[in-house]
Length: 86
Image (cartoon, rainbow, N blue to C red):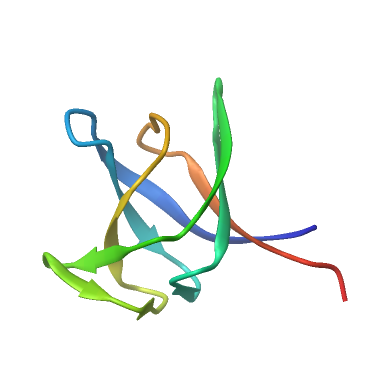
């Protein structure tokens, strides 16, 4: 798998398990990501994401998205997009 750094967790809402992610790359629904930080590392598929509480299919660098995550994350965790090696 190839890992591409595409963002950073800017906030984590523990009660609803949502991570706010500041993007430095493009992310689409269906992409596989890895969230990595101190004592945290997990992978998941992007099932849904929101900008200003509206569902979006794709988000670009510079945007901040909210995404339901399968495990707890922390501010500062790095977000990588995972792709198959060519």
